[in-house]
Image 1 (cartoon, rainbow, N blue to C red):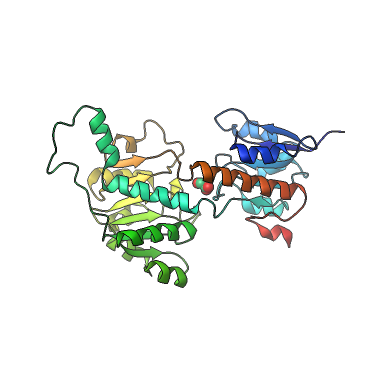
Image 2 (cartoon, rainbow, N blue to C red):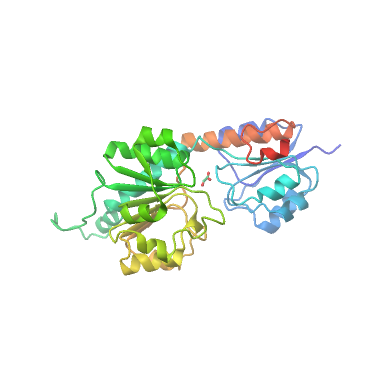
Length: 329
Ligand code: GLV
């Protein structure tokens, strides 16, 4: 008799892998070993006949792929909090629960947004390149100046868990915190001294603008030419959410023309950024390779949480963290 199959689309942290491997020998488990994700065409082959799919944000999981999988697919478990790479309505229509990993990466991602904010404001990456290039000749009274962080105004777009984590950290810097979201968070407003404002006010008044929304039709290219122009000329933009929330061509224009002072991105459009992307020619931008949640502890937690979702789905139990609970109605 053939055993039910599980496909894991990349090597994952040990603790999560052990949980998945514990399902053997009842399940046949395949873990994609290549450091790069399987191409879509390969994924189409690999998903055929699987019962459980353990995937990453680098995999495009659409209706076509689900149909290629077949009617026995019981669960799609993603090791990430974001799931814009998965066609959720298509999964729901097919009765497939989709799991994600919220909560465990909140602090780690908020820390990283702060790391980018501070690196951009205080020009740490530029300074490092300068030193390595052998250009450091003296202490310069007017060299590498940047804006103060303490006492500045921080604008947070998207005030969910991670946005609030960023606000929490801003308290230590005596910042004025503004936020824009489609809903109000009165408790967090109180706790972090944050003020809800409309988007234009936030862009106009903030020294730092940091993005923490999901990527959706509404937020696609939210930061376009017009909105970047509303920012201060001294403004710094931070994106640890999803690349396409910022229009990259508009960002290039804004940074090259001095419409805003600096940007620090952990996410780009596309990902990875192409080596000839004009943004890479600028000095006033920092670009990290989508590593905001990359701490040892957090990646282990994400991996085990996704494994727990996978295992629950295989057993026909409700996923501990399900993004489409409608499948259970
Ligand atoms: C990372 O970007 C995630 O969504 O977990």
